[in-house]
Image (cartoon, rainbow, N blue to C red; front, side, top):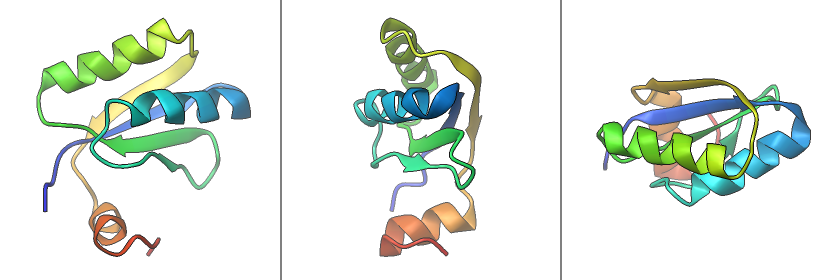
Length: 88
Protein backbone atom coordinates (compact mmCIF):
# COMPACT_ATOMS: atom_id res chain seq x y z
CA UNK A 1 0.00 0.00 0.00
CA UNK A 2 1.26 3.43 -0.92
CA UNK A 3 1.13 5.94 1.95
CA UNK A 4 1.39 9.00 -0.23
CA UNK A 5 0.68 12.47 1.10
CA UNK A 6 -2.91 13.63 1.35
CA UNK A 7 -3.82 16.95 -0.26
CA UNK A 8 -6.84 18.79 1.10
CA UNK A 9 -8.51 21.75 -0.56
CA UNK A 10 -11.27 23.94 0.85
CA UNK A 11 -13.28 25.48 -1.95
CA UNK A 12 -16.01 28.10 -1.87
CA UNK A 13 -19.54 26.76 -2.32
CA UNK A 14 -20.85 23.34 -3.26
CA UNK A 15 -20.14 23.85 -6.95
CA UNK A 16 -16.54 24.76 -6.11
CA UNK A 17 -16.11 21.61 -4.04
CA UNK A 18 -17.49 19.42 -6.83
CA UNK A 19 -15.27 21.16 -9.39
CA UNK A 20 -12.23 20.81 -7.11
CA UNK A 21 -12.95 17.09 -6.73
CA UNK A 22 -13.07 16.66 -10.50
CA UNK A 23 -9.85 18.59 -11.06
CA UNK A 24 -7.92 16.99 -8.20
CA UNK A 25 -9.09 13.56 -9.33
CA UNK A 26 -7.07 14.06 -12.50
CA UNK A 27 -3.77 14.38 -10.58
CA UNK A 28 -4.50 12.05 -7.63
CA UNK A 29 -3.64 8.44 -6.89
CA UNK A 30 -7.09 7.75 -5.42
CA UNK A 31 -10.61 9.05 -6.07
CA UNK A 32 -11.42 12.32 -4.28
CA UNK A 33 -13.30 12.20 -0.97
CA UNK A 34 -15.56 15.00 0.18
CA UNK A 35 -15.01 16.33 3.70
CA UNK A 36 -17.70 15.49 6.24
CA UNK A 37 -18.69 19.15 6.43
CA UNK A 38 -19.00 19.41 2.62
CA UNK A 39 -16.57 22.34 2.41
CA UNK A 40 -13.56 20.52 1.04
CA UNK A 41 -12.11 17.53 -0.71
CA UNK A 42 -9.10 15.33 -0.07
CA UNK A 43 -7.03 13.15 -2.39
CA UNK A 44 -3.88 11.09 -2.15
CA UNK A 45 -1.13 12.77 -4.16
CA UNK A 46 2.07 11.22 -5.43
CA UNK A 47 5.04 12.08 -3.24
CA UNK A 48 7.02 15.19 -4.02
CA UNK A 49 6.51 18.88 -4.51
CA UNK A 50 5.74 18.35 -8.19
CA UNK A 51 2.41 16.74 -7.23
CA UNK A 52 1.50 19.69 -5.02
CA UNK A 53 2.42 22.12 -7.79
CA UNK A 54 0.40 20.10 -10.33
CA UNK A 55 -2.65 20.11 -8.04
CA UNK A 56 -2.41 23.85 -7.37
CA UNK A 57 -1.85 24.64 -11.05
CA UNK A 58 -4.81 22.49 -12.10
CA UNK A 59 -7.11 24.19 -9.58
CA UNK A 60 -5.95 27.64 -10.69
CA UNK A 61 -6.28 26.81 -14.40
CA UNK A 62 -9.86 25.66 -13.82
CA UNK A 63 -10.66 28.95 -12.07
CA UNK A 64 -11.59 27.28 -8.78
CA UNK A 65 -11.48 29.61 -5.79
CA UNK A 66 -9.62 27.72 -3.06
CA UNK A 67 -9.52 29.28 0.39
CA UNK A 68 -7.08 26.75 1.84
CA UNK A 69 -4.80 23.99 0.55
CA UNK A 70 -2.93 21.65 2.91
CA UNK A 71 -0.66 18.66 2.62
CA UNK A 72 -0.51 16.06 5.39
CA UNK A 73 0.44 12.46 6.05
CA UNK A 74 -2.40 9.92 5.75
CA UNK A 75 -4.39 9.29 8.93
CA UNK A 76 -5.54 5.87 10.14
CA UNK A 77 -8.97 6.76 8.73
CA UNK A 78 -7.40 7.40 5.31
CA UNK A 79 -5.61 4.05 5.40
CA UNK A 80 -8.80 2.23 6.50
CA UNK A 81 -10.81 3.86 3.72
CA UNK A 82 -8.20 2.99 1.10
CA UNK A 83 -8.05 -0.64 2.24
CA UNK A 84 -11.78 -1.23 2.63
CA UNK A 85 -13.49 1.44 0.55
CA UNK A 86 -15.59 2.38 3.60
CA UNK A 87 -15.53 5.24 6.07
CA UNK A 88 -14.41 4.31 9.57
